[in-house]
Length: 193
Image (tube, rainbow, N blue to C red; front, side, top):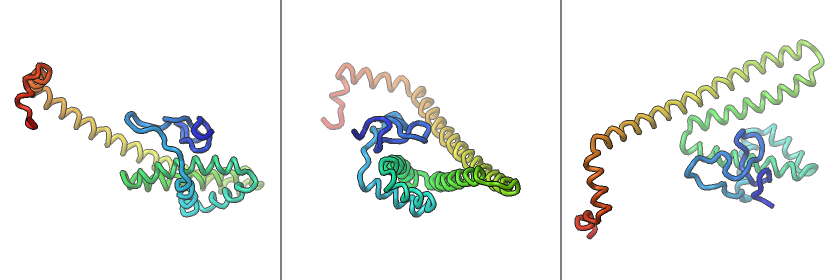
């Protein structure tokens, strides 16, 4: 039944790794997750083909042999692409960092697989050297995301402090207005009357 936790068509869990349950990753006030449409699945595949071609090829080989696994992977990707599309509009810089992170993460996983298959010590050393460079870049991108989030929160906090200051300065007016609303005296002065 689509819509159950862990089923295709549900958003990834809070850790972003596996299918979650309704509401995972949602901020307060946001609507619950919307079911994935065929258009969402198609958009996810196009995204993967354009941005992660190696992963796309592997996924295509899974489709016939393991259709349920294929459906689960594309479903999770569809949620990620939906989030990325929103991010592209709201915060293009963060979107670019996220795309770079995905590419580096995929490359690090490929290198890990190569490392496990490597027979020669010099091969392993070369793989680890490249892996170190990639993981270092990933670290920098993640820290840049955190810095941006801190700046955003600082701005939000400054605005909230300003609002509170103005409200404290206007306390008497605000209290008087509320009393007028409660007693009905403000109705005579209502603009729309």
